[in-house]
Image (tube, rainbow, N blue to C red; front, side):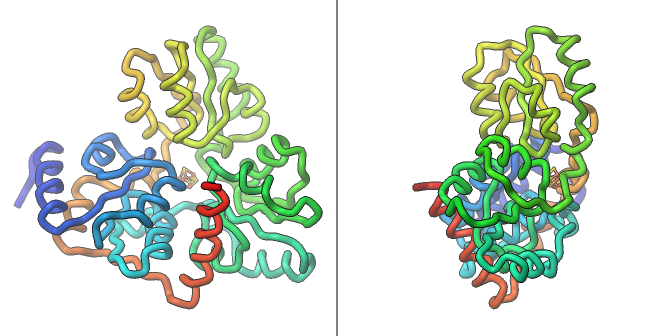
Length: 308
Ligand code: SF4
């Protein structure tokens, strides 16, 4: 059967997900039509919590692979579907288990704080996971006198270390999208839009962060935009976030800080692939049980520390 329009696809997805009782969770970096058919849209922290609390036994994750893996880790009794399992995060894949074991060997008392943008095998050898929305809060609660290896995003790590005035050890990886934003591009946009506020994600370079009026996770940026009285906002994170900000403040002009802010992996997920996934109930994401159990400890600890 050939579906001619997005409206047809969205209608069929809504019909099938109701018929098969599938709970669709999407990230803010997904295209707007995917956010519109999702039961829940959030940042990676909120997606993990939503998966854990999912009212249905089948969860479809519209996001990159580590997001679907996190759902499978937290919900071992549920079926977790990915509409496009090759959608991945190059930064998450940059670190090896051996990098962590080397730190642990050199610093037996040290702690490994793993950004949630990591594969399950990395979470399994980490002490605790964090996301950009809770990393500072969680690290503040960790013992002060032990070395911390923050992996894998060095920009996020450097921005948190500066905010907390605490030294952290970093791994030399960064998001290939956010890391391309330059201070020059922010200054150029500010010159073009002098009344605009600058809102950026902490995966950006610290020099970019230094120029911002607000630094926060995708959920934080949306919240700031909703409460701001500025009618122009320069946005320094992936362009998919415009969909939600347009909903919460439709009269605000949004300016993308740099045209590089498009994650091609996030955009690999399409309405067609979601429909196909619902029809075939594939691809099922499974994490080997020995890894899942250890990774769940780091993720559950994140949820506990972030919510207390
Ligand atoms: S935006 Fe960056 S960190 Fe997020 S999935 Fe894409 S490459 Fe990974």
